[in-house]
Image 1 (cartoon, rainbow, N blue to C red):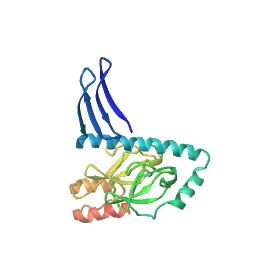
Image 2 (image 1 turned 90 degrees about the vertical axis):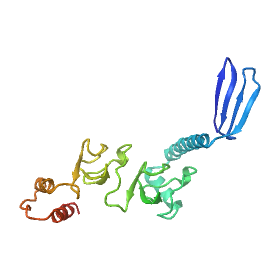
Image 3 (image 1 turned 180 degrees about the vertical axis):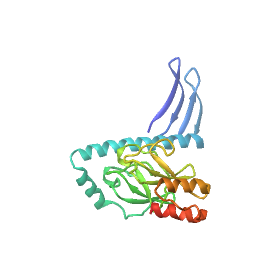
Image 4 (image 1 turned 90 degrees about the horizontal axis):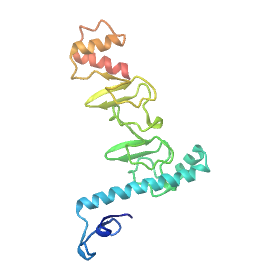
Length: 218
């Protein structure tokens, strides 16, 4: 656990001790003038620091463990000891209980699939939502969790499909095409269908046009 300290003229004046969750203050002569438990805000800050330190420690442990094993061997070892698929995600406590590639967990009411071997991260980082045709877009952190061509996501209240492989761009910036929904005008939907090779549909209703869009994406 860490302690955050403030000195003035070489004298310790303030200390936030995350180990004991205690704040202490001294005067210019080094005499203690206040000591109290952490406030709710200070507890939250300490909790965040602990989680960050845990992730760093686990990452180092995993790097050391994986040095002697191939990715396939590491994943097989973790799969053999992993909890049943679909159970609630919990923060791994060490290299031996990290999540293997492809493992499924539940978290904040959603199902997630691990995108990396020895996964110590909290969803959505290094996880991909499953069981949802249009999952929320999550900013990729690298090639391992980039989006493939044809991937479908929801972003800024709209639906998007990826135009490229290894897509790390935000929808609306590059590499994604917006997909028509009920908010689109009928002419805009017809234009989208025409650009995708579907013509002669001007006589259809808006809902029938949207059904055609859905059929193209199935």
